[in-house]
Length: 124
Image (cartoon, rainbow, N blue to C red; front, side):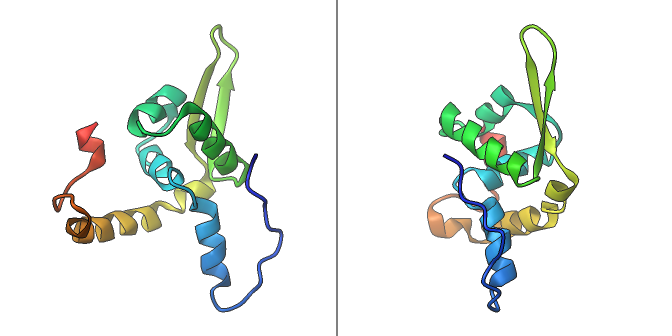
């Protein structure tokens, strides 16, 4: 079941932060978006990047991001069908946020048992 969409936020001082976090909340969304920064990927290519994510969870996360307008799902009428995912214009606006999160993570990853400069994309 997809997450409930809020048509209005309680516009307290953190309202815009709540809205932004609401779009990328979930264990895998920010990771999927990070990998889509490099270009269009097919479902199994995304699965290889997020190895611990089940296919069902990945499907749910992709559907939510498509419903939120962050990604574009393109289905090609071929046998077997080919489905590709890419960032929408709105999703592309998340790039500076994702890069800032990566920089913060690089600077503080030692606190969580990974060496500084560790990039999970290089380990894949």
